[in-house]
Image 1 (cartoon, rainbow, N blue to C red):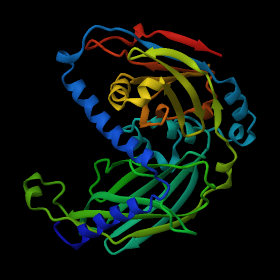
Image 2: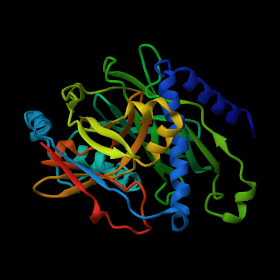
Image 3: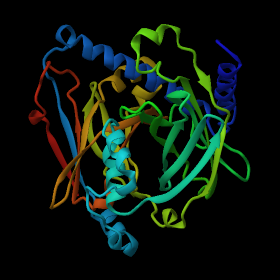
Image 4: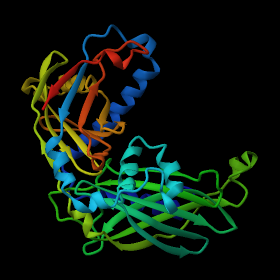
Length: 375
């Protein structure tokens, strides 16, 4: 470690891990497995020309969401707050940041429907300041938008520590491997924009009174823009900057809609099924169940999960088609679960889950996917 500040950052990370008292052994195993699996998939993509064989099977699971659509259509505050799709107002910089994220359509849909809470609270500490610009939430996820800045003596390097605690008990929200962030300076040397997505446990009371804690890192002014000086740059870190805020009660109105399509198909030579789909404004969660023989043998399950690769979740309305990407996945006792971004506030008429073939040829078109329809 270079200095005491970096040691404090490591201490923060250890403390966050200790505070995850809701994380059980299954969650931890799933998080570790997900990281291993993503690494393996990246490797397969890099060596696709050598490893892909013939296409053996494709599956696309189509399910109608009339129940969920009617549930959200009955919410007058959503109907009354629709904005223009390109009107992000003072949050415009975050649209550029979000374009780099796999679940960009989630925030676009939330802002399009006014499902956002402006905060605009700023805290300063020495050469640094942080602004919590806005938040949005549902039962399953909290998304915060924030801006870090430095004074004229420093160039911003990163916002390496972002966490949200409940004020009444200091419990950190989220769990190991679940929190995701995307950040960008958008070409500026003194300012950085960030968006952090934090999973919530809807079995617990909705967290209304919160505090967001940030730390900003920097280098001396001018170094970040001069590659010749990068080798000798020294990092500096702010002290923790805390912003207190209360979540709007409007985020408690929308309960998760649960569908049970029970659509069966073959995967890795064993029966599998799409057992449950959870729909909410910020998350679409797709749960698969495997055959008991697969769940009993980790090697077989590992191989089966490696062949269960969603291509996209296609949400269709009368006006447009939105392709939602998978943002995370986790091993479960009965199978595997994938989380996608959500545009459910757009009231999609249908959702189409498209799975890649178990074995693909390089450049294989998605047009060959097979559709299985459920009402």
